[in-house]
Length: 177
Image (cartoon, rainbow, N blue to C red; front, top):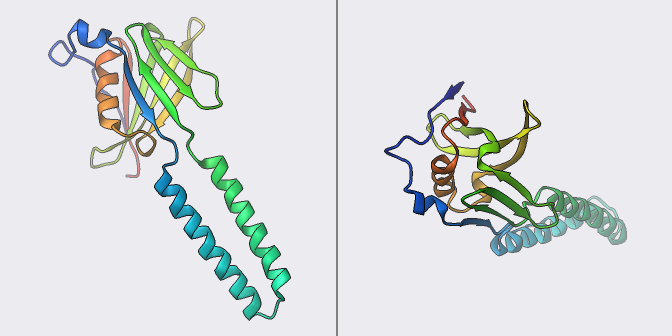
């Protein structure tokens, strides 16, 4: 279900001096608590794998190799899907996303053509995708930000709504209906 909603109205828009200030939203990436929890989980999985292999009659060397392969594959998977630290900076001229190990994405406010917000049926926002103008008529998704990856996601969303130009399309998708 999609709906276009109007953006900043004169009543909700920030005064010029408030939107001219640079605002930074930072994501820590994977937190230390999650890293420690994952390490404990992997140790338990390794012990369980070795126990099952020994219980089924495999010798300790075979069970250790099986456990090491399983855990190595799981760690590689986590490296691929783990969110890297990033920063999104709102300035008077536009927005910029800086991500560790990636090229910086910078978009001037007039080039933000569409914002797509995904929400649960209860109204809780899940993610926001920002689309930029490519060429004269083209549209390209510049980046997407997920609720779990950015502390203060609601503040980020409200600030984005205040800063994008009024002619920018804001699409709300209700997901998981």
